[in-house]
Length: 110
Image (tube, rainbow, N blue to C red):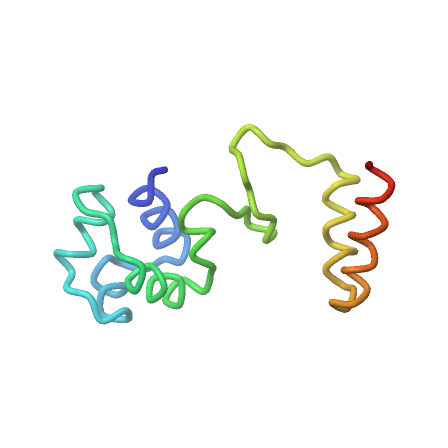
């Protein structure tokens, strides 16, 4: 997990400087620079503030979520087009419908 690279890449993609992100999140620039350079790892509260600054999830900062919002459990996992479509359609359902679909899938898979 390379959080420093991830936050640097996100910051650059937003066209922001380290100082701008530090000011936005209420961090000292030196602390933020240390995070980007992997000298220190931000704590949970700081990760949440960074996610708010970047407009993304903490999972995305940690490298566990792709740009399209799919949680990546293992960097070796890839999702076929059908699997990606399944996830997108599943997210459109109500919680009750999602529960029913999961029950159906578990029943079919056993």
